[in-house]
Length: 331
Image (cartoon, rainbow, N blue to C red):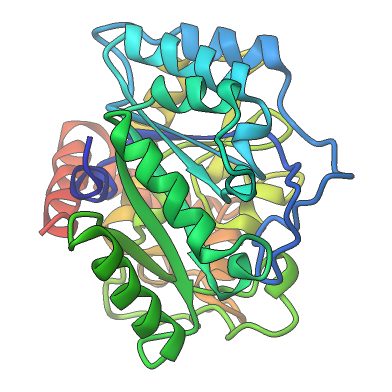
């Protein structure tokens, strides 16, 4: 599975599932959105995770499952078991790693076995990770993984289009891999360790204009087993979770139930189609101070917003609206 396929699926509701296996990580990257380190023990119950992924069927499954963390490869046996269960039902799997293991000359056998179980491997690399793991070590490990037959990519993070590091690292990757390994580039956001110094999240747009949110497309299993409709880290970590973004819990719900809630919620459909700010405005709700995401989280207890969403996005018409927005986002 290539990076372009992953990116192409991202706007489609419930086409993917994000599994946070653990908040533990041996690295201390200065921009880490989850604030992970080796002392944090937050992670979903293993049996519940296995049961949840085991509830996939050939007829009802996500197209792709992304294993992330923290560092998912601190749990290589679990990562391999989850990938096996998902692929058995027809899902493809990917893992995102901080590459802690690349500091060893050889990839540990248990980690290499786990990587061999997935369809795509993505390595995090940026100025913050390079303070923890040398670029040359990451490149050497990626060559070994590519040689094993697994598709690979880089997940790069920087401060924006003018970041000189991003220009340097993309040139280095192209030179090292002959232009055959793609990269996904993201901007550092003010979550986790970057909360005190990164550029603020985007503010609310013009309420009269549609500003769809694709972050509400793929369900996310958080570190306590709660399933959220949003991958924004402040939302993933917030308890109680906003009602309209809470899709259930892996201890009590299966994939079919979570998928149905994600797909059939009129509020989520409208967030994905026109965005939370426009939804609130058309429902008569007062503008919410703060960022775009703050405004979304505030929608949960507003019955006028829920009623307005039902009037437009309930039933088959709402499903078509959602699909049209996803197809537009995939272009």
